[in-house]
Length: 380
Image (tube, rainbow, N blue to C red; front, side, top):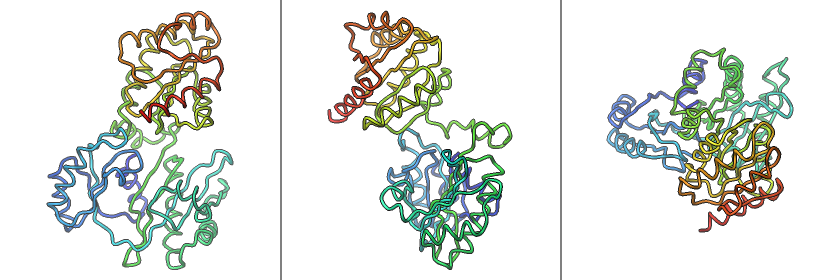
């Protein structure tokens, strides 16, 4: 879900959000800035963090500036997502920035309220570097979020007393919104205290449980918005592939969701970062393997790729044929590590002998080689 969509839900729930409108061209950004009084924030609408660092957010003083910055931002591609739309909002006079979020903790099978006085930056960085600045209160789903939960989190996080009452109201509304829309994450960052004392949601994010989208007609139509998906995810969906773009450098292809998830974990255990999740499924033929590899190789951030196949329904020799077809027709410039095990694995490995592929006998060896190759690629 994009920011403007989350804020539309926030506004419906009575949460305080800045006035703003969506713009798809620089002229529209200028008109919106004029209607809002001139000083506005122009924000790229992409489903990824780090927009500010990438130049996707600009605070401007005049409608002319808004038009110029809108033209610049609409020409950007932020971490693989082209910017096609902008949210133009009235600029706020910020005094303090807090983080307020509610998400599902799968390990405890319960929602958790997260509150911090260090808002405006990645909460993951704050939690890693100064965990004492992030308060977490786990909730009993049967009881829900109560005022004492918020007071407890605010005390732990060091939220000033004058902000406690409005944050309590905002947190309660955010929890209701999360339940009503089957969300697994609802966050406001920053949840800012303004110069006039008001607390406002200056940025917002929601993530809906895909298994519950059938209950949310409006949100289901938003899910079909291709701007909210990475272009590679859109292309993979057209090809019938289960692909999720991640923020790493080691491309992953495997057969079976469990094997792919384990491969992601193994890459991280070896000190690398997975670039994607891609499951070719059981019984995948050579053309499916070829299509999957084309998707992975289309990611400019990928420095190496690991193809990890366990042959049950899938035949390893068919996988090998798909890989060889790609090598013969594409200019593959990154190292490819292959681990084949199971049905017709020996035949598959025999087909790959003498090719440019790097073979690995064990799971750990395959991950080690893929991570090492990615590091070498990043230095070249």
